[in-house]
Length: 344
Image (tube, rainbow, N blue to C red; front, side, top):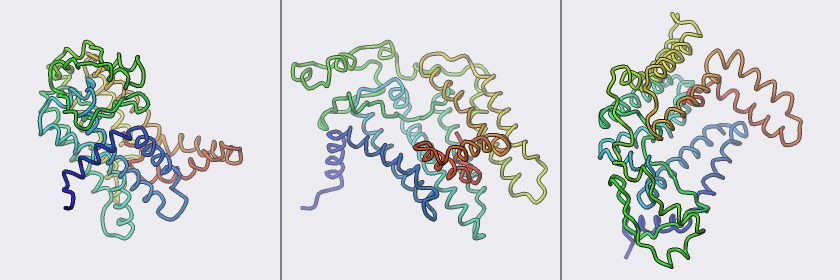
């Protein structure tokens, strides 16, 4: 009798858990390979991005599976505490983030043939993402948005002892993690005594109810900060679309960049001081995202691009470094042409 879809799914999950380290290594190697495809042949960047997006979607499924079967991190516990609508919106937001550059590449090729407006697709994607962020804010009673809004892979393949596929998933929404029953066999099967003890240690966040890992935003200014953060990318691409598609744009080439930067800094100024590890980690990530402004608009065209091109020209014949220079040169026109290469 042919195996059912459920049986195949169970076998695949069992294979994944039994070969976690190998699969993670393969995923990482294939991702690294895609960095060298642009410029190697016609449409190399499209093929590379298609492979990259497919790998990321596969990894997303793996992450969700491992989050169910592994000891939940504070991030995983928090994301699992909000019900089906939050989960659906969060997954849709992450999936859009994985395929948005591929969609833009396809749309740009169709635009060259006069079949569509690429910027309409980019604006549409950002509008959907802004709407999904509003759903997340509503579902969490206006708590700060997390990135990513779903459990990420917290398993170190070199240290983690994979759980048995038959082991029931642990609840991520419970107030405390159940204390596991230990045995000598469990201790022997652990990769090291240190990793075994760390996996069985209770921390303060284990005793905190999952929704309380992030406190709601009460102040109007704090809520306005999150709304600005949610809509800033949409406002930026609307300004870019006007600049690139209007026969007589009323905006200077600096306006979209300065408007976006102003909104980012305003959201930063209005937000509340970080409360707890999750919020500190999220705000630190937002601080790092400000670095992407070096690769956008006139700052990229007049400064960063010239510096990178000068570096690539000077070092293209150096041993080993010349390989990096070639990759830099291949990516310069891609950053020129595509919004999502430098979106955060």
